[in-house]
Length: 65
View (cartoon, rainbow, N blue to C red):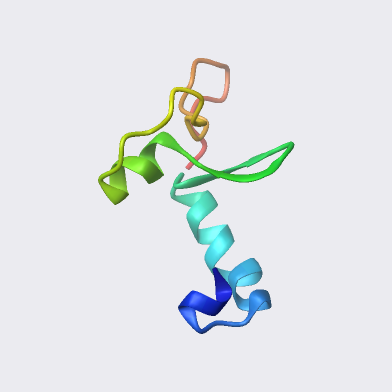
């Protein structure tokens, strides 16, 4: 991804990734990072049935960002 954006890997990890996490377009999973339902919707793509919701599910905290 860094090469396609002409950015350093560190820039993506330090700047872009936290922003995408904050707005709910990606989620941290045990297997790495994954696009959320909101991320797929923003790109105009159909999300797979197992796409993370980004924290909007039922729970005491709900969606944090």
